[in-house]
Length: 135
Image (tube, rainbow, N blue to C red; front, side, top):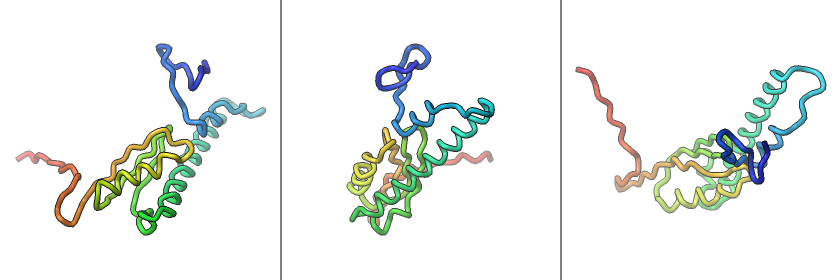
């Protein structure tokens, strides 16, 4: 059921959706064909929408003075309103600027900023992953 600002999900919880996704979910079913075909079309539309948001994120960063030569160094992934950004930067300041620049992209509800800060002085936000070897 459609509720103000979102959709009522299980347990009467309101699930908020980005506007860009709502138009794909509530569009009319095709005159001919099955529900399965309509779902497949919706899935391909969502993937196309995700690629568009990811490309837009890269373009927005490329135009920003702090990231003109670095926009291609990041990985972008968009899922259900969340823009995930991965990469490396030399300062926490630039990590915050990156997040601020990307937050106004249409369809982005929140940003999962997975950018690691790695400076030339050896200070790093990279979490070391330890592996246990059976021996």
